[in-house]
Amino acid sequence: MYRVILLPHDVDTRALRRALWAHRIGHRITEEGEGQVLWLVDPAQHEAMLGLIERWRRGEPLMPEAPRAGRAGAEQWLAPFRQVPVTSIALALCLAVFALMGLLDDRVVAALTIVPVIVVKGGLAFGDLGEALASGQVWRLLSPAFLHFGWMHLIFNMLWLWYFGRQVEALQGSRRMLTLLLVAGIGANLAQYAAGTVLFGGMSGVDFALLGYVWLMSRRAPRSGFFVPQMLVVFMLGWLVFAMTDMAALVGFGNVANEAHLGGLVVGLALGWYHSGRARRPS
Image (tube, rainbow, N blue to C red; front, side, top):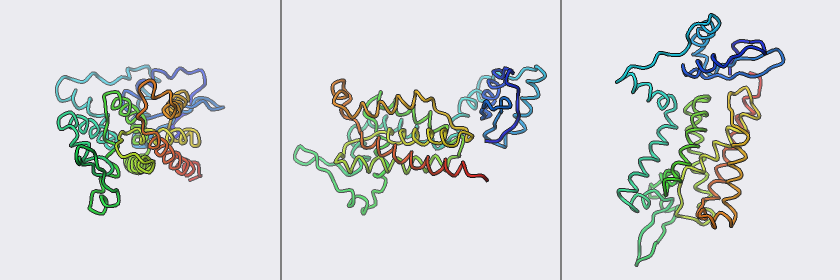
């Protein structure tokens, strides 16, 4: 985060903040002892931010013009997805896999489970992970994360993937988001497999990793620009604990990949601790 300007405590900045978000300028305002400090996420937007501040001080209109119908409207609709390509591609893959599951049934599931699954004499037979990897099926380490077994499962996971993933990618870049996705996805899947489960799926392990990462970054490096409401952290950790109890089964949530959630959370906390520590060091 880059410090741009200091404003008095009694200045109403709501119009300026709305305009900055409308112009897709990542920022944050913090209350310091000397006043309100406006921070900028991307230094490439410094001139654009200063221009808006100057117009705000003169009382001029700040909001961008409404897009014209047609191509301009489509460009504006796609802009948020283009700004966070890794998060957008992961979300699109989950939706595509879910659609294919509806068309091709269990063939998609069998191709993406952590080990090969075949039907033998009316029952299921599971392959070995080591043999699958040795034969070149390395995608199975990550692919269960893209499987979802119902609309609620899909919507819940995509909501948090977009909420947390977009924040990570916008503030720290696509490479960091890709690293989190790969490490957390593989780590969560291996944790669930080590617990003796083969038929599982979902992006929730990655979601919990992103939760842990964003939470630690916001707490240990507050100037990094990360933010997560404390009640959201409490809710998601409460859900994690609830899903491990017998009560979850009584209300229809018994088949939950708890070990994947824990594995992902541990990965996210570990990476968040490391990167927040680096962010705190003086440059």
